[in-house]
Length: 73
Image (tube, rainbow, N blue to C red; front, side, top):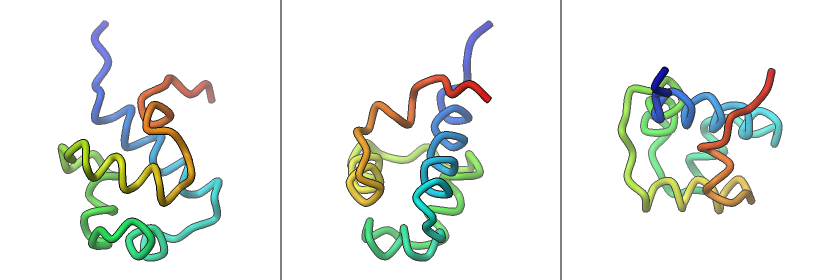
């Protein structure tokens, strides 16, 4: 079964943000991306650029690969 990379990314992004105890607004400020962009990315409504992935990873203090790994629940 093929995994949806956007779904995996968005799920991981939200989990990492919540674990870091940041709001979407705080993440948007620290990543220099609009809050609506962060919200859309977490809901899988955006196919975000690699530059944005890099900004979000830096703001969350994680390596970009963390957004693409399978997280066991």
